[in-house]
Length: 323
Image 1 (cartoon, one colour):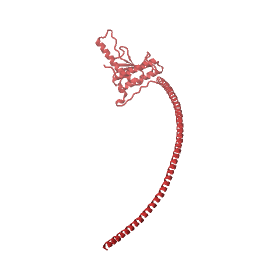
Image 2 (cartoon, helix red, strand yellow):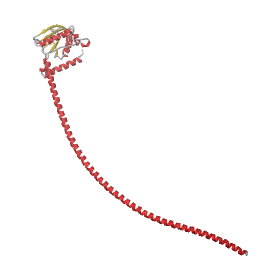
Image 3 (cartoon, helix red, strand yellow):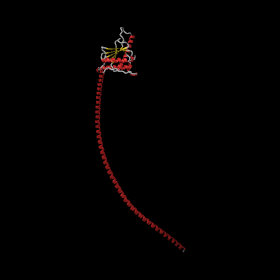
């Protein structure tokens, strides 16, 4: 009996276990079926999704192809347009280059014309300058001739200034004070008037006028200032006498030079001269007044000689020889 109870107990226990396991199996079957259903649903959804993706991929591929075709078409059109623009630009560039060459050629022609015009202008300017110089030279020559004629016709005028200090031009003649002067002139009115003017100026400077002579003997044109010359001796002069005579003559010449410089500065024709031996005393000079020289009527040779004499006189005044 106890063995049967044990067996029944085992049977019940096992029956319970079987029932439990059966319930559990049914539950897992239910869950499995549900999962299988869910997996089937998911598979269906995946299939549908795959179909949609496939269709979408196909549409994307077609769109990409269409886009690529559109881009290729646009690129081809752009390239064609660019080619046209490049060709047009090259055409414009060619036209511009031709125009530039034409302008350069025109500029060269214009430059050549301008250069010729400038050269012609400069040539005409030089010709005008040469003509002007010739005209000026001719006018200057005519002016010099007119001045010479006026100078020849005008009387000699002796001017001087008086005043204190260096303003008195007669101070130059003061070293002649105490000397005796003989003034001789030809009968010509202008010459006699000139002799009177010289006498007046010398007297104002303190010079003694010994005699005033109107002579009919020939006198050189202009004014001649004659120096002292020692009397001639019946016998040859001794060396001492010769040295004395030479010293007297040089001192007389220095005095005469003061009058020559004074009158020459008045633009008068004045030259040195020598009196006859024994005609003058050592402290005397003689001034001879002839006709007024007429530069207008003088020959070129005489003018040249007078100019050279004046240059020599000026050099002598600036650097007189040592005594």
